[in-house]
Image 1 (cartoon, rainbow, N blue to C red):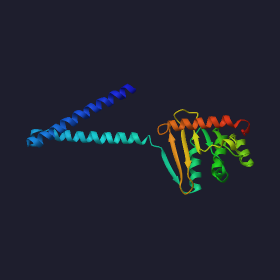
Image 2: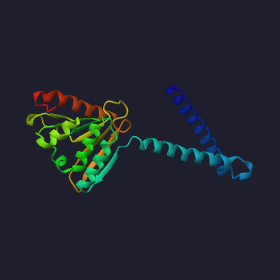
Image 3: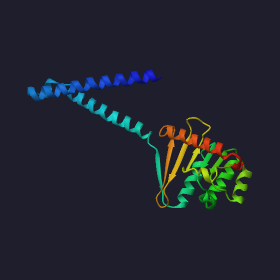
Image 4: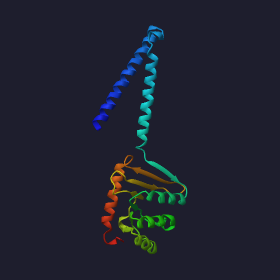
Length: 218
């Protein structure tokens, strides 16, 4: 398949180059020879085809290029962030939340309920943090099936991210948060826009779980 794509692109470039050369030759012939356009009846067609090829290339590259750009959202309020989180974790068969502290989750009642409902329906939830989580909240989510890992105060994860579908290669999505409201920015990567970053996030998750050891609150 890759060879077919290479041959197609090469053929297209050759056609584009020949069309451009003929068009430039025709324009030079008219300009320097002061001929009438009737002497070159196909020049208008060549110009039209050349412009169509240029426009087609721009559209093709533009559409392809956009797929490599991550999605960025700016949330002005905590409610907007909670709404995003609730929707984001609803699209994963596995969800891993990494945060240095989970103060935001204590106040996000709808997200708590979403985690509980999804965990009970079979979604795998892992929550990695460096600080103890409120007992009642932890017990409630653990009862639903969520697993907690505490890395300890000496190994605080600086990253704040949520990774979904880590068990499905190519289907992963990663949401990384930075800043505070009203300039709370979330960058969303997928297998096209950030496969390397997703790989790094998986490494952070694996290392954090390994370092949790006896502090794990499963």
